[in-house]
Length: 199
Image (cartoon, rainbow, N blue to C red):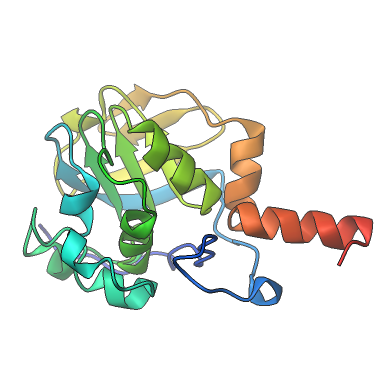
C-alpha cells in the first residue's frame, strides 16, 4: 500500500443504543456528506467478512470508538491500522458484516477513519445499523475489480465509482442520505424535535 495524505475526517459518532451512552444534545450534524467523495481504497475481496473479523468479540466490552478503533480488522489484517488513513474506504465481497447484530463493528471502522464501505452486498442488519449510525455503505457488484491502494471517486448522485473505469451502483434513497447527512438516526430525531418544538 502506498502512503498517501489524510483525507477528510471520519463521520462523527452517534451510537444510539444502550451499549453506548451518549448525550443527544451534543450530537452534531455530519458535514461530510458531499455528493462526490475522493478516497483511497483498501481491498478485502473475500466474501462473508463477519463482525467478529471487523472487531473481535473479545473487545465488545468496549463502547468508545477510539478504543474499538485500535483493534479494527486485527483478526483479518494485523497491518490494517498502519495502512488506513482518515477518509479511506474499504472494498469487500459478498455479505459484508454478517454475524452479530451489535453496532460495534461500525463504531470500530469509523473510529479508525474509514469513510465508507463498498461491498458486493451487505448483511441486512449491518446495512441498517450503518445507515442508522450515519455511516456510508454502498453496494456495488463489480467494485472488487478495483486495485488495492487505488484512488476512487464516488458520485453519490449518479451512482458511479470511478477508478480507471466506471462501476455503477444503485444510489441510496433520499431518506438514507438524509440520515447520513444528519449524522445518524438520533440526530435526525433531534433535528425533528427542534423543528417542531418538541423537547
